[in-house]
Length: 130
Image 1 (tube, rainbow, N blue to C red):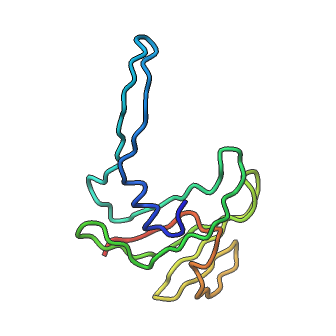
Image 2: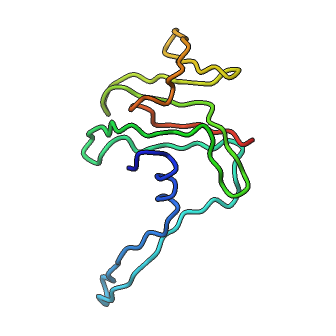
């Protein structure tokens, strides 16, 4: 994982190459895989992988810009879901922008949170298309 969403997205949309061997003829081939967006959504949801294959949590802080541009579309960050704990247990909470003020919503508690993006537990980001 990179340190910010933009670099993670750029990596996601890069061409990925991998080698395959035919089990019948043993012929080796190089394949390419590339993700694309064909229709840009009104709501862009970015979900980061926060656990390794062995179940250990990746607690790296990922910077999330307030705006992201794709082609001719501009998206604004309006909500983030975070998780504390482990893969087997923990607590979810949300940070959302309401009338320009960021709020932390955790169970029944709602508090102002101007440092919404300074959290190494952020893992789902919601952007709306302007």
